Amino acid sequence: MTPTTLEAAAGQRAGTLVLAVLSVEIDRVAALIDELEAASYEPARRDSGKGLREVLAIPRAIGSVAYCDGILAGISVAAPLESFGHALGGFPDDEFGKHSTLYFVDTTVDSRMRRRGIGRALKVAQLGTARVQGYRYASGRNRVVLADGMLALNISLGGRILTRIANAYSDGIHPDSAHYYRITL
Ligand SMILES: CC(C)(COP(=O)(O)OP(=O)(O)OC[C@H]1O[C@@H](n2cnc3c(N)ncnc32)[C@H](O)[C@@H]1OP(=O)(O)O)[C@@H](O)C(=O)NCCC(=O)NCCS
Image (cartoon, rainbow, N blue to C red; front, top):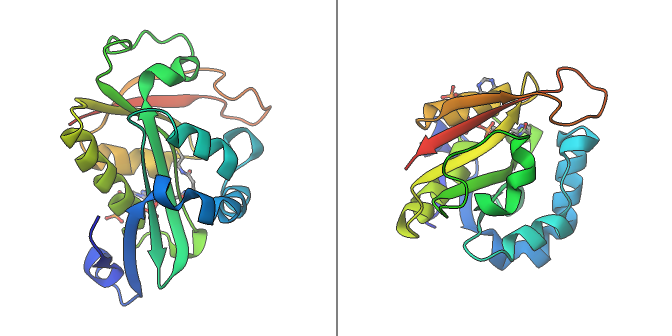
């Protein structure tokens, strides 16, 4: 992944953005990921650095990490859909079992650095790697209302909503549903 600048990415004056492969960096940033997740999500959607390390160990997983002036700015983790059948909530994704789809588990940007193009840069880097690896689609679920920003980002990358999964989190917080989307690579 090549260095870029936030200024170039978002037309704003900001520090230097460096993208790297998360599986290489994960041991160094796992504790920072715990902090990022606690600050960004309600408990039901929170992942841990340890949990994401396990996801990144799945064959054909793809993770990216962004540093802004050396500070962790964001992470994104994805792995083959076949490892996440439980997240579909019974929706019969017709690509499931074909090893064609990269499922996005977690994309998170530090709240102080949002709307500067970092989330897009993280995801675009992974989608490019996915194409090279032979994936045909990317998919994921976005919590209604709470992840509407992420859904907008996915739609801007060509995503379309395939279904709405009810009772997706079972945490007593409403809405408790998620949009399941697919991007064709
Ligand atoms: C969702 C998230 C990763 C986006 O990261 P980001 O770096 O702020 O996103 P970008 O600056 O790259 O935005 C790219 C596009 O996404 C969309 N977008 C991002 N945040 C948005 C928001 N709050 N509302 C509406 N659209 C939004 C826009 O289309 C934006 O393009 P634009 O800035 O040209 O309008 C970040 O807001 C975040 O970490 N949120 C909390 C965690 C979360 O909900 N993650 C998703 C889990 S499924």
